[in-house]
Structure formats: structure tokens, C-alpha cells
Amino acid sequence: MRVLVSGGAGFVGSNLALAWKRDRADDTVTALDNLRRRGSELALTRLIAGGVAFCHGDIRLAGDLADTGKFDLLIECSAEPSVQAGYDGAPAYVVDTNLTGTINCLNEARKHGAAVIFLSTSRVYPIARLAALPLAPRGQRLTLAPDAGGPGWSAQGVAEDFPLDGARSLYGATKLASELIIEEYRAMYGLKVVIDRCGVIAGPWQMGKVDQGFVVLWAARHLYGGALAYIGYGGHGHQVRDVLHIGDLYDLVRIQAGDPAAFGAGVFNVGGGAAVSTSLAELTELCRTATGRRIAIATEPATRAADIPFYVSDHRRITAATGWRPQRDMTRIVGDVVDWLNANRAVLEPILGAP
Ligand SMILES: NC(=O)c1ccc[n+]([C@@H]2O[C@H](COP(=O)([O-])OP(=O)(O)OC[C@H]3O[C@@H](n4cnc5c(N)ncnc54)[C@H](O)[C@@H]3O)[C@@H](O)[C@H]2O)c1
Image (cartoon, rainbow, N blue to C red; front, top):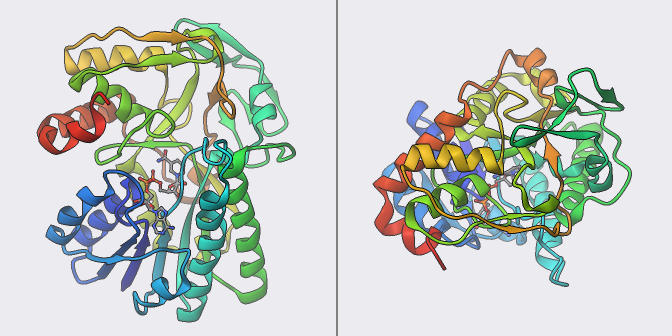
């Protein structure tokens, strides 16, 4: 089998490409990336050592995709993944990569009769509707009442039928627009595609920054030093996200890649779910335990544009379809990240340490 991983030098792409090659040594795995994300260049030696071919290219350019040659499966992991993208007044990169680039990927897959696994995002759900969920403080986090529920949500989290009306950020909008095009390609051309709407993903080799990759950012600042702040919602750090270990995502991708029926199905919410979630304040405790270090956390009460107080994936649909469920909890996620930060300090500190 020939597997192309777009965004293959990024956090998700490099981990999936290397794990795939590790488990299926006879397959040809190629990673395509334009190295836009700071730190993605660190993946090159890992990819080569792991037997993954690297192709320097940009999904905005159809010709770069064509240069990778024939493939049977595309795992589409390239993106501008920040929900803040475009708020600086410059929407072109996020639109050109996350929408036009994705369409280029779909066309290349059609050309080869290849299947596609598309990593979408929980950010397709609109900001105002997520922000309106009835949350109450409990301990160090915001929670939904156990018996509460409404259209597309319950104490289990947000499900695939959560209403889609309203603004969602350019990041979320370009992903949702890609999903719509994918549905048309499925219906019109019979393209085989899986759509996974992922909540927060975390693990080693994520180049965490304030606007994307908060688990790694939190752990790195505890270990290497530097400032952290609870931003928004009064500055208490009680906002909540579910978190999926990259190893759990890989397990799911392998199941989906091996199941032809998966490629005809709609969309799936994929995430750690209620059982694997954390508030920032809880994450601080986990980082203190895992690193043995305490740093002061500042407070910035004002909420940033596009932020939401709570997101937990209701992953019951994908669990019912495949039997998959997350196996790695928050302690394991933070532990694996801290081990990686300790083992690779020399190369990581210039990127993840104090600015
Ligand atoms: N990490 C998460 O928490 C998370 C959550 C939900 C969805 N996702 C999705 O998963 C996918 C992977 O995200 P990630 O966390 O690995 O992000 P990442 O930034 O680590 O990786 C993305 C990679 O794409 C590359 N890239 C950017 N623009 C490109 C272009 N035009 N052509 C080729 N390569 C390009 C970057 O250099 C980077 O290496 C994305 O589609 C993202 O939207 C991630």
C-alpha cells in the first residue's frame, strides 16, 4: 500500500506516518509538507530515520501534490490549525490551505482512485451556540449538569447533530466548507472519504503555542520556564477541553483505513470525551505533579475572540461504529509529553521555551 500523509511533518501527520511505517514496514509512506509550522523541520530527521519519504511541497499547488506520485490512501493532516487565523486581517493563508488546498488533495486522490481520511475539527460547531451551553462551576472546572441536554448535546458532550448555524472562525469555516465539498465528491464521484471531527489532540512532537497545542505549551513552560496565563472567562482557568492522545487517534485511523464501510459514512466526532478532559487549572496540577515544578500562572480575565468555555466530544457514534474508544487518560498524556520534553530538551527549548 502507498500512503501519502499531507502535513506529514506536523504533529499529527508525522506521528501517524511514522507509526504506520513502523507497523506496516512493506508499505510506502510519504510525508508532504511545506514546513510552515515552526518546529516542523524537526520532523525531517525522524521521518527519514523511520523510513518515511519526505516531499517538500505545498497543498495549495496541485503540481506539488502530483509530484508525490501514485498513492492508495491519503491522510490529510496539512492545515493552518489555529482558530485565531485570519483575525489579524489576513484570511488568505487559512482559506487557501484549508479549503483550496484540501480540494487539491481530493482531486489528486480522485485521480489515483485513492481513499482519503480527512481530519476535520470540533471548531465546525458555531461559537455562540457552544458558548451558550449551560455550564456551572464544579471544583476547578466548568461542567454540564448530568441530566442536562439539548439539540446535539448532553452530559456526554457535543454530538454530530449539534446545530451548525452561526459563525465559527475561519478555521472552522474552512474545515466545514471542506466537509461540504467532500460530501459532494462522495455523491458525485464516489470518492471514498472518512471525516473525523477532532477535539484537541495532544502528545509528543506537538509544537504547542498559545493559540494551538495548549497541553504541550503548559507542560513545556512548567519544565523550561516562561509565562503562562489563564485567559478569558474571568481568568480562573476553569474552561474545559477533551484531549485525545495521538496514539489513540492512530489506533482509530488504522481501524478506519482497514474498513471499506467507514469511507461511505458521514462524519464522526472524535476526541477524548468526558472521561479524558481537563480544565486549565486541572492541567496545571497535572503538570506540577509530572514535572515537580511550580510556576506562577497569571490571569487575564478578558475572553479572546473565537474562544469557547467548554468542548467535550460525544464520541458514541464512532465508538458504536468501530468499537474504538480512547485508551490513554490525562495523566498518561501529560506524562508522555513531559518524558518527550525531557528527552529532547536541547532541540525543543529554543522553540517551546520562554520567548
Ligand atoms: N492538534 C489538534 O488539536 C487538532 C484538533 C483538531 C483537528 N486537527 C487537525 O489535524 C490536522 C493536523 O493538525 P496538527 O495539530 O498536526 O497541526 P500542525 O500545525 O502540527 O501540522 C500541520 C502541518 O501542515 C503543514 N502545512 C501548513 N500549510 C501547508 C500547506 N499549504 N501545504 C503543505 N503543508 C502545510 C505545516 O507545516 C504543518 O507541518 C489539521 O488538519 C488540524 O486542523 C488538529
